[in-house]
Amino acid sequence: MSPKSKKYTKLTQFRLTYATMFDPPEELHRRFEKALARLKADLAREYPMLIGGKERIAAEKFEDRSPINRDWLLGVFQKGTAQDAKDAIAAARAAFPAWSGLRWQERVRLLRKAATLITKRVYEFAAIDSLEVGKNRMEALGDVQETADLIEYYCDQVEKHRGFEKPLRNDPLKGYRARNLSVLRPYGVWVVISPFNFPVALAGGPSGGALVAGNTVVFKPATDTPWTGYMLARCFLDAGLPPGVFNYVTGPGSTCGQELMSNPGVDGITFTGSYDVGMRIYRTFAAGAHPRPCIAEMGGKNPVIVSRRANLDRAALGVFRSAFGLQGQKCSAASRIFVEKPVKEAFTKKLVALLEQTKIGDPTRRENYLGPVINESAAKEYEGYVGELREAGRILFGGERLTVGELAMGSYCAPTVADNVPESHRLWKHEMFLPITMITEVDSLEEAMRRANDVDYGLTAGFYGSKREAKWFFDHIEAGVCYANRPQGATTGAWPGHQPFGGWKGSGSSGKSAGSLYYVQQFMREQSRTVVE
Image 1 (tube, rainbow, N blue to C red):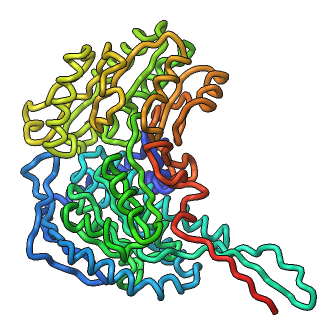
Image 2: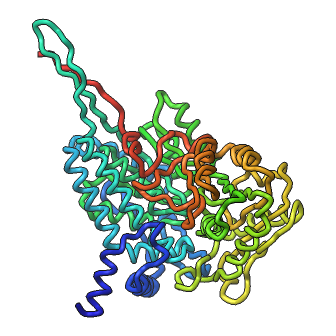
Image 3: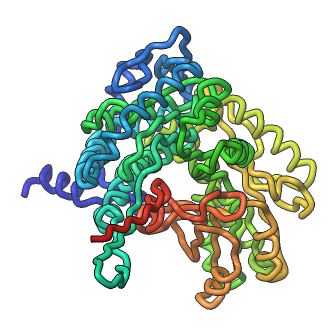
């Protein structure tokens, strides 16, 4: 076998997940860089909305600029209005009877085709993700591949359960024969509103679940990430979904977004974002004429507990990756670190040593692990939080905007570790969504657990210690996604079919997790059917 063939074989055998992406084949880097160069040579194009299978141009536009360098105009997008949102809902409503009436096998076939297109376009897709969000290349590739895997997983679930049609006990009626059946049926028009940080997985995952269940979808991406949203829409439409089954609208949350939240023609909604907005949507839906499903994932304030018996090298690496990956802009980011007193100093030194080696800059470059925060507003919030932490405690590392050379052209913030902040300080319970983590020593694991659970959130949590202690941790922590002794990430890195992702308490509304055994059923409601012969 030639060297070229060996490289190709290695690439095709490589399975990209968040757990394996830290040792990729060289060919992966070459393909990413080739796609990136091609895209950068053709920036600033205008992109339409896609409603009812047709392109739509709005009277007003908005620019999509890269947080890496504000001079980079990535594209021009449509400033959709409330009327555009209404039209998209109407198109989805018109398409629903035929789409829901398809055999489930046909919907699965089309959704698998969309997943295949996402994988086929993974390098171009990831390069856009990196340019638009500021992700390093491996984080971006993971976001895109996870999307395809989520859709495939939901197709698998529908196939495994044969469209969720289940026979029930038959009535013992003398002189008659009764047949009973339980059927899960789609709701109708489903809205998906996605965040900026995972603009592919947190859009394509819920959209795929809604679609394979038989719903039609109206999708609105975050204002910071319309380009990745357009790419996702093209994959669904290019796969052959009929007109109106998947609709893509862009525009302000105050007009276009508000219409999607409040329109009575919407039968269900999936939202990923802040607690405040998520609860507003949840309450808005509850005020309708009848109950409607609202799947809201609303952030986290995720703890890590480090025992005196922990492997400190593994713990420091896991915390580093989860606290600062994607610049801390993950709902699953490790933002509160509770370390038993005997190992606090040694652990902190190891964490700071990792930060001192971290390269920050244009994340499309292979050598840089951290990029910019999403926009200037986020950077100003960073400065405000750092000021509070500096006044209340001390900054062990970071704590400043980075403005030297090329970094001045973007929104770059140093990864920051704060220490000695009083337990009563508000930032122990407030989600910052930035490259900031807070660390403190505790006298016991029981104290650490009390503080870990003393928040309104319950999304992810991590632990480092003995096997016996890990079992105790799982039995007592109040969170939906829990990890023990994981070097790939203390609180981050869930993958479809491996780690279901969903929150407790104020982190989630449904009690069910994405990429899990029970997710796709949320997009359907049960009907029992009895036929007497």
